Length: 349
Length: 226
Image (cartoon, rainbow over all chains, first blue to last red; front, side, top):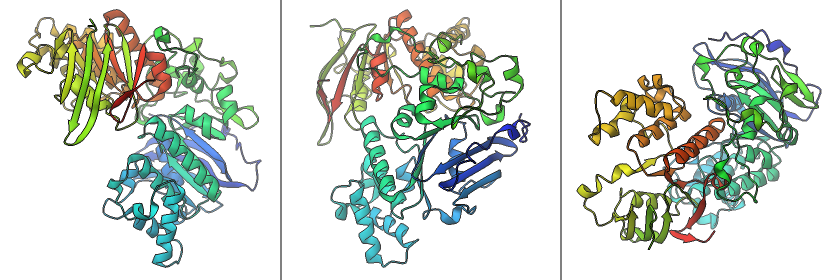
């Protein structure tokens, strides 16, 4: 069981404090716990104007809670410390829907089943701007039109169940961007969709973000999505940052064994690899991610890490700067090979 | 004629006036992996349900080990069912939350009248070990396992029936990325050792390319040439 105060947390350098005024959203030493169980354990990052930051992690990594903290909608019973500032303001909940908005994972449950989609968008407009119902409705229709919903006038009168999955996800993107927020937070916006729809929805999300000039925090577990869409990436594991930096640097030269293992375990996406090339085993990370109530001592990834030595099992790593803007939390970050294929092959179960 | 393990010909599945599967034909040989992909709503799941005879198709034939299944009575199907086993996407949803893992894995043996109190528990332990789970996990309930462990337990349960064909419906898409490769490796190993055939439903093109011997694609109920 971990205590919430960690001796190494003061080692974490304020990595982005040297960058100045274009920071929109600033998170410092965010900690979230439930009944003394720490789920987010000291997270710091910035989101700058018009930037796309991907937050990568798997179940239990704390990314959904982090998302909720960004929107000021943490569940009751959460104990939090640290700060989240949006343009310097700490009362995020008051700015939700105006300056910051959410594209949720499950569009169906995000929309009311008993109101036409257009009415729901119009209500979002009127909650912020003092415009007439007619004007709000007109904006709702044009927002649906912008996200590529055909026959938007008619579709605005339809209910969510009359939309397909992809159309629903477009509608919630329209809703999130209709008030031209500074920051859009998208929580696994394509997880429930098939591959083709994922592409479409991400394209629409990107277009709308551009159109309203918003920054995007894109929560995902898909490194392919990160590669295509993110300027920077923050990799989380067991409630902490393991690596953060410009996407091309992190993916080209990951410094944390966890990131390197994730990349190594993706099936090669080379067009020349024919079906049946599969007799090769994939590199894989042994074991499973820990749950917040059963964190191992020291580095939380150490029990699964082929590079772990005694030290790693005893002391939580601080943060090191690998190169400009690229930070890593690993005791052995400068010994992580890349590609890490060999490192993660044939690990005993 | 073909001596394929599974030979599906002109399969038609209709729901009222909607044709979900429209004259689909394919074969899966013993020891082979055939990937079936396509967008949501293209008829993949209806095809799977008809192959497994969970839903009787409106037309066509499903030949498994040379026997035409669509005309068999349920009583005649029953002895064949263990030989074609599904593994589902949601690892938690496919195991009863109220049964311990060892009971879930033992259940097919009991239902099929192959349970022997003397060596049954050892058989369950062997199956768990085979899928990379510590047999001590048999005492646990599904919610006490991670998604990957749960999916391994689901595979162990399918193996208990000694199948020749596994129908894998998005078996890794609900899993955390760091454990997907391990489950795919397990499936590869099991196929090599046991000569299993897989009908593999998957959205991820890279996974299909890596994992499947052949791939077919459905759109709006029909096969399209890849």
